[in-house]
Length: 264
Image (cartoon, rainbow, N blue to C red; front, top):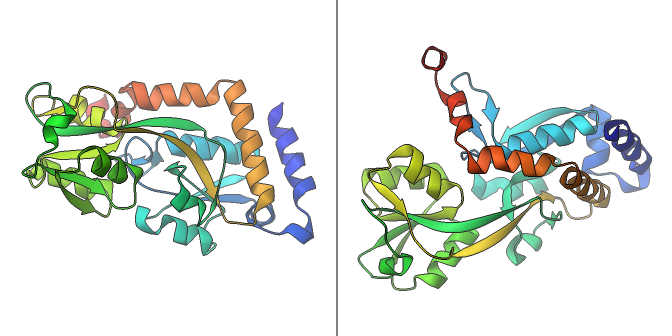
């Protein structure tokens, strides 16, 4: 019942005097969404299909608007630049609300929250504060709140920055760094799913907690208002909670990453 209402509302809001991402999307019949590849937010299956927590959100939003989805994976370091350049109508990439981003774009109300934790090379439990020494190399992804939170909590540690999560995870696997600070469920998945005998997540309270929203270009009030209304509706009907439970608290989705021969 909500889909026709949202589509009609979008048409009403699409006035020539307020052209922007929403109006452009309605004209082309497709919603262009920039995202960043990082499991479980957006990850490719063996067939090349993008799946993930953010992918499901983008797909549902486009469907509710009666539009097709044009998903554009981009490097995290240029995500907001690509949005502001007009390459996409909005960005959905587990973006934490913070003042730096708010100076560049407009952010919606939160649709999710995430804890920031540290996963480290360890065969047993450890306290996060044990990493607060100069000979511990902690990997962080440039421009993330996890990087800021880790530096604040562990000021004596040595930090290495990486342009994206995949390169940071490779450095951890290769032993080039001792630990990685990132938002959940990446630390837990690294410890539980990848190499459970090699990694552990630090005990205790998280380094920080983020509230995650979508990003739109400044001035695109129509799309911002519609996205906020959509988030409120999807909270009420349980979609956001169910989507988060599947991607963030279970490993069921990992079966979809196996080659077809292995999944039989």
